[in-house]
Amino acid sequence: MSAIANVVDGKVVNNGKTPDTSSISKAVEAAKREAGGALDKDAFLQLLVTQMQYQDPLEPTDNTQYVSQLATFSTLEEMQNMGSTMSRQSASSLVGQYVFMEETSATGDTKTVEGTVDYVTFSGSKTYLSIDGTLYNYDDLKSVADGDYTLAVKLADTLVAQINKLPSFDNLSKSNVEEVGKIVEAYSGMNSYQKSFLSSEEQNVYNAYANWYAGMMGAEESTEQTESADTGSTEETVGEDTTETV
Image (cartoon, rainbow, N blue to C red):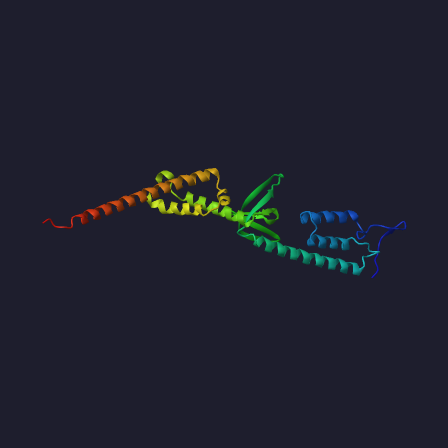
């Protein structure tokens, strides 16, 4: 079937099917906006359709060119799917890790958020990390802390949480000796690097409870020694007069 075009004064006039570079440019810009500034597989397909729509009817694009472009489209789609799968696997491995996120607001302000990843969730092609109950875009991931850093943060946070569960310092009693003792034991098991993750205020609060615990243990030990001495003295007194007077 031959193509028909309007001819005026010996020249082919645009009948709506001849190339229109402005329309193609608009299609490119629209595709970029939809893809967030980058040409993805959907944008590629949109451009291909636009090219077919505005091709020259007198010199249509050869079928082999479309086949080549479709092959390129399939390769692009496969690569993007592979990249998405690898991105999801990488994000999933961050659960339990201490990470740093860098968010940029609509006004251009940047803020850094840090914390342990609780879980990972997916929405369409987007991946989100949950930190302290808030979801952050995986694309905003700045860095991941090493194992020593993560462990130190966890130990410090756990110690502070245990101290916060205790009654106020003025309301401590003998019933709290065991609880405070466990905290003192946990602190003793931390190395200097891990202890450095406690703020000066948190360190002072811990020292107050630790001193109270040491005082309670010292008083208890003193009481035990006194009771032991009293018991020994009683036994000695009972065993002194064992002979009869003649």
